Length: 562
Image (cartoon, rainbow, N blue to C red; front, side, top):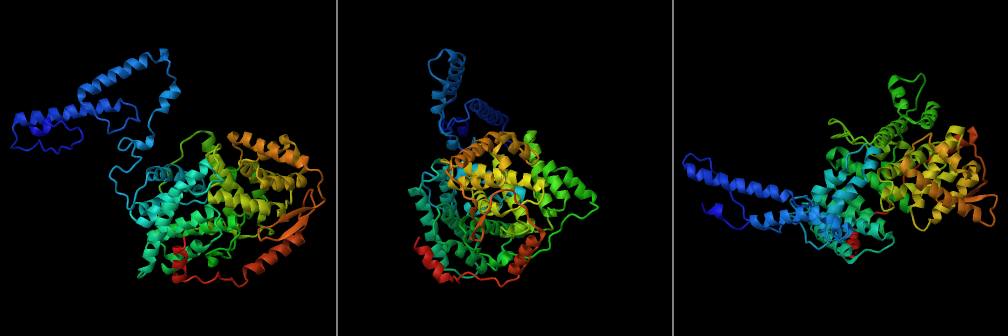
């Protein structure tokens, strides 16, 4: 049989040896051929995982190579070659195709490839997508990066170039946090913008999801590199409007939830207004009522004692308690080193995915309201979830992380405690925020300012034993302890080295209003809290100011300037 004697190891052989017209000799030859290929495959599995698949040899050479490797392995302790130098020569796992499924062996990507594409897409699937899992766990949401976005990357040219540019930008930020975009990032960014221009110029009817994702990637790049222009964020709102609004984006509200979440954290980080002004809703939040129901008691039993004590006072809404319970369960599994349970879909088939404000309505409150403790707590829990996921990593490139700590830095000096439990909770929140800034090198100026407010308001926090004792009543993860103590010590040293401290602290709230507060223990009289609550209610019912109108033509002009 000619196919059985073929010498090209890379050729494919299609066999049908079970036909009744085939002779017994023919069948034996085919089975022998299959057996030889099977034995060769077994020998290849004995090779190191990083062996390149295109390095093929005939059977005799493979046998010799395998035997020589075994001999070298037995005598490697007497060799002068260090293990480090041997591993240094190993090719990257990204070069493995069929063995590791880390690249595209069929070259089926929808756009032009550059040398960075394999690394960028691998980083997208292996790093960026898992990196955001703690946030999606906190707000009980499926991962849109794989469910919605990645299929678009593989099928839409503009989305492909936008995803490659964004993924490579995140990768470069891990290596050089203050660096500018490389030429490859710029190439794919401009390629995505060029394709978007052509599609906008010929647009007939509602835009497709690939265009929506292209604009989303361009908007994320603007925020990541701190570009002043907001055209792409406004363009995102325009594309959403052309598709019929947030409620018509499909996937049972998953796309809407992701866009609302992105807009919220962009707003916290940049200080700009929302691009979806009608997403703010006035919902009547439910709080625990005595006597507590059995399902509520079950949730409270999962919380650390500090959170449970505050919740029993009726300070936390039911939505806050549910979030704390989910994170607490995840933390216990992490401490016990248990595998995370596989949950196919956090929302049942007959329901839509809730957006960020439906999961936790207090996130819409401003800094100086009665809900500021709840809002700051959830923002700190989001940061803690990222830190717990990877204690040694820096998440300063993640928008949700940056936006949360930015808002905490603005809001915490205005947040007041009304009892010892809330005071201890604010110490925990302050330390989570200070550690998030402490990951920056050198020690961030924002951390110094926040530490100044921290030690002035909470004199007892100048003792690490007191701080640690208070934090252990809330979420505590031992691998974070060294980072917490190091950041606390840096902040304390900066505080103590100041030549003189005034009797008041200049602070800025989330609305950009600057004021002063006297340091020391803070308490909130009931009348003032009611006044602030009334002011917040009045603001909520005020007329919403729409952002400047952006037409398709003006956005097309903006994109052409990229």
